[in-house]
Image (cartoon, rainbow, N blue to C red; front, side):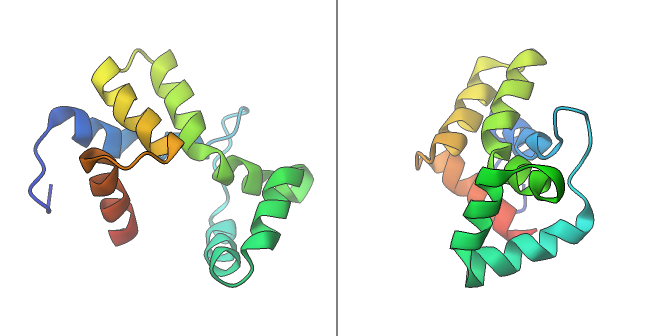
Length: 111
């Protein structure tokens, strides 16, 4: 909204895009991991991706984080989210650059 966006579907997608950061058991990613994600993605992305592929035990939050955009689409669809909002979330998860996904990435980077 700070950037002037008022499209209801985009704003809903912005609210929902991180809902996939909760695992199948309903557990959120522990806060401690977020600093580790940032450092590894910047300095050693291969280690982050290896941990995400392994994704068991203490590395489970890596798998959840790495797949959170796809998980968000699934969870939003299961909750009955409007198709227009799902399309934005799906584009984001697939890495497609649209005006909406660029706005979401910008907003995510600002937070």
